[in-house]
Length: 156
Image 1 (tube, rainbow, N blue to C red):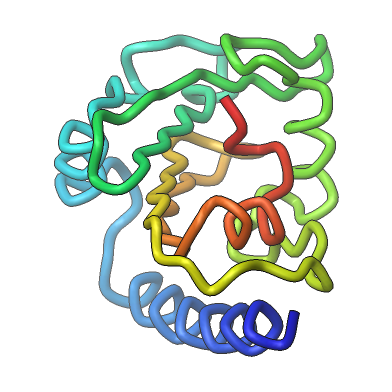
Image 2 (cartoon, rainbow, N blue to C red):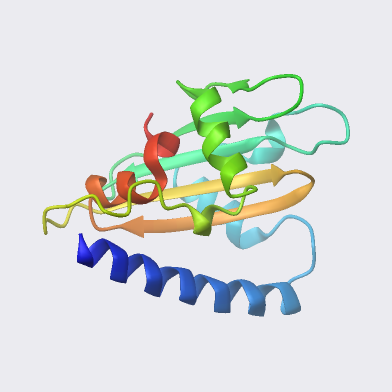
């Protein structure tokens, strides 16, 4: 329990610093780094799927466990309804709405007690949220830690 709280606090701080630096030095638009990461994780490019006009591409979520093959799904969250290939788009979109699409702020069940095993789960989210570009990747020590912080968002 304490490890998840401490780790998440450190990660949130580090991501805030990186996000601030990235905002001041990276132009808006697609990033070849995020495109390369999406390709490396086996996901499709977010631009290959279309959303409502003017809304930008939906989120492409990826999950790779212990360096194995990546799985990916598409998640659409909008006024017209939630959908895509995610198994539970309503719940996933609800989680994202709680943090206004700012994935580093996710803290689903921070008091969850997780075993000290190392079975890395790498997740990614690429696309747009409310017209803003989303580029998020993180590696969690194990599935329990991933679930404690992201809930069912990456459960597919």
